[in-house]
Picture 1 (cartoon, rainbow, N blue to C red):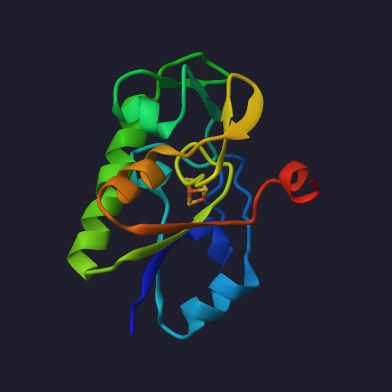
Picture 2 (cartoon, rainbow, N blue to C red):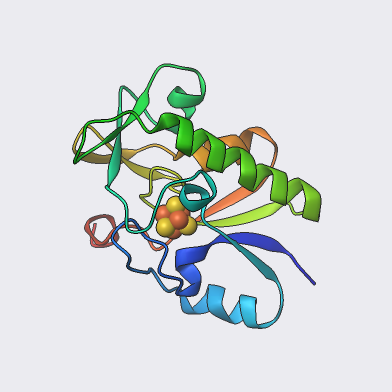
Length: 153
Ligand code: SF4
């Protein structure tokens, strides 16, 4: 039975901005049991893979939903907020269609981060756009695989 959505990169899918992955063995086991729908908000939002890295300016995903922040491409400087918002809405649509109430999301990502994101060059407390939108819809979000600089603290 499907129980949750999970960041596709946690399943070993090469969806990360640099074409890499963030495999999480526990999430892979849940997927094998048929409990997980994989989602990648940035791909669902129309961004390519590989893609340039983005980071927040002005605040985190909550601030972006309120129009107080945006997501800046680190190579081009372009504002990618619209792609990130589109991806977040697509994930919410999948969650609602499937009647799911839980999401396992990769920590530190501008879409999937639950407790940690990068704002203007610093890894700080905050959440990504998809995590923020899901939380607002009453979905339980759990951050997985925090960045190593956080794990060591
Ligand atoms: S962290 Fe989220 S947006 Fe980034 S590759 Fe993984 S699933 Fe896609």
